[in-house]
Amino acid sequence: MAFEDLIQQLRERTARVLAMGGADKLAKRKAEGHLNARERIDYLVDPDSFFESGMFAVGVRPEVRQKTPADGKVAGFGRSLGITYPLWVGGDEVGELSKRLGNRGGVLPHTVVFDPRGKVVAAKVGAYKEAELDEILNRLAPNVGEKAGTST
Image (cartoon, rainbow, N blue to C red; front, side, top):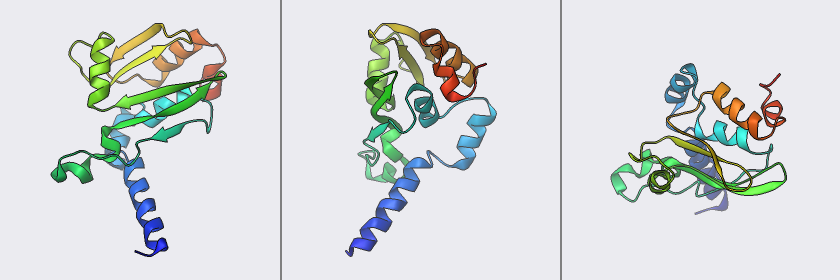
């Protein structure tokens, strides 16, 4: 396979992953006031500091490989307030961790926000709305909401 073909294949796979299920699905969730996984990460980290790992993972069953971009999770490392920390959004493994953090049913999405010492300061089963996430982050660090452009 020619180098140019490999680059094109990489671009196509990246676009499929970043589509996160398609424009219709994302638009519906946005209309309901929900942030998608990557938007939630954008709220939590400094601009251009998130390094995603596992973007090209897929489900193990061949019949779902094209339907499981990033294997249903977004994982990587981000930097905020001078601290680099791991982020993991979605996926079965996250469900198991979620149960250990109080989500007995293992329902996703389950968002847990920790303070810099690792203490859980907020947890919610279901997606956070933008205003809810802003409120939590502003309690942790008043200038975080300003970064997102939604605080006054």
